Amino acid sequence: MPASAIIRRSSSWFGPARRAARRWSPPCSRPRAGLERRGRPGRRPVTRLALDGALVLAGAGRMGGALLAGWLERGLDPAQLIVQDPSPPAEVCRLLKVHGIEARSALQPMMPPPAVLLVAVKPQVMDAVFPSLAALAGPQTLVVSIAAGRKLSGFERHLVPGAAVIRAMPNTPAAVGLGMTVCVANTHVTPAQRATCELLLGAVGEVAWIDDEADMDAVTAVSGSGPAYVFLLAECLAEAAIEAGLSEPLARKLARATVVGSGELLRRSADDPAVLRQNVTSPGGTTAAALSVLMGPGGLKELLAKAVAAAATRSRELGQ
Image (cartoon, rainbow, N blue to C red; front, top):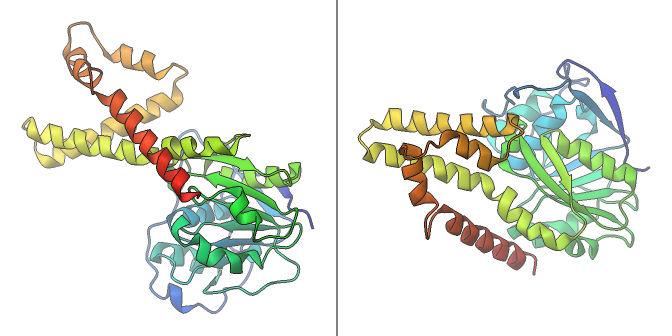
């Protein structure tokens, strides 16, 4: 059965789960709150999502859990979801329990095979776990990996000839529906499977495609790792504020609000970031004085270039 998606328009959030809760499993014995998705500014009507077949999610950590929350928000039937994770985080356990989904420690081949197998395990353990996961895939199963640095060929060698594989690189803002995911597909992915992947990953933000897999190392360095750079900026800004004499609570509040507000302004504006920067900068003013340091020799531009190069190099190493 091809992996294709049926789209239905709706302006409401998903309704109650349509099946009774199953027996709960030990990995999720201590649920707690924390994974509910927050509203997005200017959110459009929700696109309800259904698949022609089962969706297996292997790995329900931070990113897997964010995807899971996004799919359920979009109204995907919990009965179509099969989650494999021996020890999901407590907040994911709570989400699973609410929707009557049992987290399984291991999976056996199923008939019919799933429409989609989405692999969200850490790249460091991929070699150990993917061979058994590959046994779940049938000839028409779409395999999607979100593991950094792991090439398409590394998955293809464990699958049947002609298997459809997509390599994707999401980032952590997916947890609030503002993620950015970049994908590359092998030659066996059909237009319908590509559309299915875009719907699934689009449940947590924007999706873009590249044609050359070699570009994925740079994508990982910029978009995949990029949120950490922004968080570091917020850390450093708060520490600088404390050194300038502000109290720690006020310093952290100002740093957080400045980063969040500036990001939202950038998101909503059609202007280039350079224009927005210039709009804040008066000749001879305080911002100009600060930027003379940040934009000077050895400043932010050079540091970010080195950081991105280091991350891209590590991504290539993970793929070897």
